[in-house]
Length: 381
Figure (cartoon, rainbow, N blue to C red):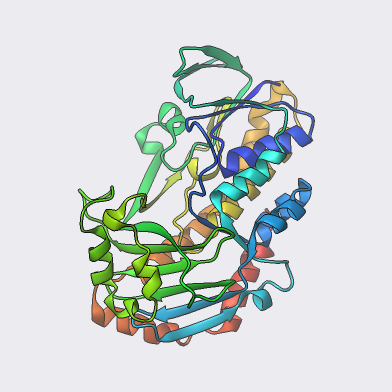
């Protein structure tokens, strides 16, 4: 069975490693030239760990990631709303870890040794002919495959090529975030801290590299790339936090040089595959970063797809793809709904609404948090 995976991100590399483990030799194309940049911060829950254990990559991941054992939720003026011990919440399931995207990709690449990679190449056309899929690439080449997997992210080119606009939709929060790295000595190792203000949200998350700071504010149409005054705009919007965390804000690059912008929108597809082309990860159901669940859910989906593909021959692929969708769709859509609901609570412009929200959050107990984790962890995948 000749399989092409489009996208060497988390879901694509996870699927490639799992298929290789099952004796298959998928080919991977990736539009980026390299995968060496740190990228952004990730939280990997025990759901993702299960996949890494199955690939015999968990020890390597533990060696290269850091613990994320605590979570602090604060107001925009640095008053604590809640503190949770994630170690305690996840005790029945395993460790909660944190890393950069680049580190997780490096771990997954170890499971893909010997597979064919084409870097700096993307797909320009897909034509399904009977049970074969002809794919055209930006390097001018054409190839035929039995199966094509679109694992190319929330702005998936594969999705645009195979689905109609009516078969998928975006959910846009109207907010966006700027990312930079910090090593403020006042930050606590192993603790993720979020400041839920009015008109902004600041998240600071541990990784093996440094802490990642993510400043989220209402989106401005013409300000999605670094611009003069970005640093001062962030400092002004979050002025109550500058004094308690001076280095965080001092380490914002001048004029935003090197910072990356993340528009906070996701996507949901009602159709997961057409004939022998299937979507995976953020390409089919994308996640907002509000709960930190996206990476682990993408890995879990890759595990289910690999499982179904390993149980059929090339003549019954559509059966496997139907079962993949049936096993995953409700679960990932429910989790996506949770991230959207979180966004509605996090991203509040009004000072009054922010105050009322924070008062309501004080009633959210550790027991409720633990039960919400158990609901997803104890559900079949």
